[in-house]
Every structure is written in structure tokens, then in C-alpha cells.
Length: 130
Length: 116
Image (cartoon, rainbow over the protein chains, first blue to last red):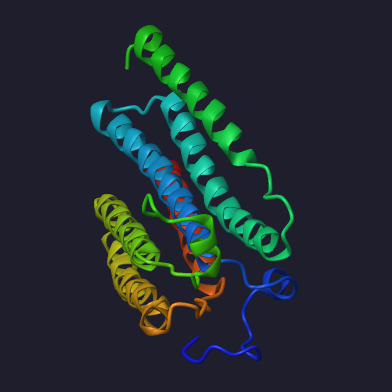
């Protein structure tokens, strides 16, 4: 990384194997977007661990619905973490080859998913009374 | 980006990442910090029931957290000292590494949730 040259091997070759070096600002913005997704993933995981800890601390027997909700949030965090890198790679590849950027699929999953989780929490609060 | 910046001037100007390298390095650092804090909180929760596992997690996590921070700061340091037209040559290894770490933290969180 210290001596830029055309012979420098950069990983993964699926990204750097073709196309031209894009404007550095685009690559940097792509990287910050990746990092923002990663922080979102960690927030989802923290929410999952948090509600399960409260679940265990407030009653002698854990509410299984809350446990499932926690697992759902954690699985969402894992999914977002895993796709954040593949999306970074796909975007970097598109920037290099001049093709259109990949569609932001995870945005819809996250948006509708969090809306569903919000409804689920509201139902738990009102009906189950946790 | 100033008002009198004409398209012609922009076309002739070399690529200047400006403060983008700094913004990106800061984004790396706050992501690394969130990771470290989240992992430590999770470890603290595990310590209630499995102190040895928690100790092992801390001993494994702290060097990793420091390493991610050092690599993140070094990632563009050489580039910011270069002339403006040189491109950052960081690759996808560090992004892949931290994404994998996040997946692992999520897996540990799921095990914690099931075994709590």
C-alpha cells in the first residue's frame, strides 16, 4: 500500500481485476457507506442483546416472544454485516467499470424489517404487557 | 466547491480528495470504537455466568480492536501525504475483516441469547 504502482496486487481481484481507478472521492464515499452499514448492523445486534438482557433481568422466566425478537434482531445484524461487504465490493466494481450502481436491496429489507419489529414491540407492550 | 468554481476549472483541476480521507478515517475509528464498546458490553454480560469465557473474549478482543484502529489510521496516511493526483490504494482486505468480525459478534450474541 505504501508504494502505488500498477503491479500492486489488491484484494479481491473480482473487484480490482477490471476497470479503471475511479475518482478517489467515490471510493472513499463507498467505504464510508460500508462503514455506516456496519454500524447499523452493530446497533441491531446491540438492540437484540439489550432486550434479551432486560427480558432475563425483569422476570424469573424469560418471555419466549422477546427471546425470538432478540434473535430476529441479531440475525438481522448478521445479515446486514455480511451483505455490507458484498455490497461494497459490487459498488466498487461498478465504479471501476462505469456501470450503474447495484440496487440498494438491504435498504428495503431494513426499513420494512424495522417497521415490523416496531409493530411487534408495540404488540408485546400493549397485549402481553412486558 | 466554491461559487466561482466553473466547470472548466474543475475539469482541469487534479483529483483532490480534500477532507474525504480524514472523514473516512474518522468513520473507520468510530466504527471500530462502536465495535469495541459493543463487544466489551457483551463480554461483561457473559461474565455473569461464564467468567472464564468472558476473560478469553477480552484477551482476544483487545488486540483485535487495537489492530483495527492502527490499520484504519495507516490505511490512508501514506495517501494524504502524496501529491493530490495520486490515488488511495487501500483494498478490500480490512473491510472484509471487520465485516467478518461483526458477523462473529452477532453469532456470539445469538449464543448468549439462547444460553442466557
